[in-house]
Length: 117
Length: 114
Image 1 (cartoon, each protein chain N blue to C red):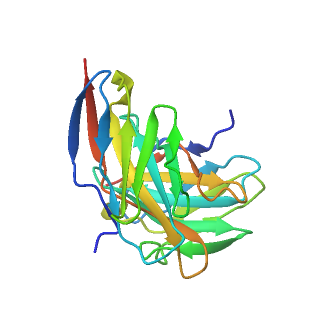
Image 2: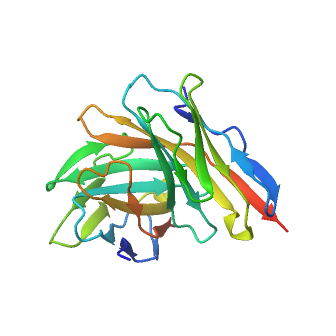
């Protein structure tokens, strides 16, 4: 079973509009964390936002917010006021404790976001 | 702002050859990671390294892979005998003690095995 599911292979949004990128996860670890990364066409991975499983509030970082619905096991990324520079691949990831005690992340397949003027 | 660096940015090699990918993590970081991303696919965890030893490794990280921290700054990934399917982008990442939520990724090395 997929641990991280991103059901939207591609999304389009108009500049200045908000967009939601979906992510659902599956884990039996009560202590997990959820991340979103941005990968522009240049290839680097840019950390955007993190949500811990015990965090009561939804994480926010500037124009990025994470809509964390624990019961639904979803961690959608909301980008407000989209900019042309937001066009990129977006990866949702989850970290869980591995057998050796460390946390390791599992990534989803990504969503390609295109912002058009 | 400190950043993770990786060299080379691109590497082309013949099948069966050994390659060494180099990373310089952020200087006060103690945890190091390698990931790979086959073209058009998701990022996959390979290995994590702490205190001069491997702390976790994935099923992908088989005997042909090894990691080393040869000095106080470099962190290397060696692929002993490359296969066509090793062609991918390889990312190094690092984080500091206690900051489990934030790994900083390098720009990646694109490896092409012919």
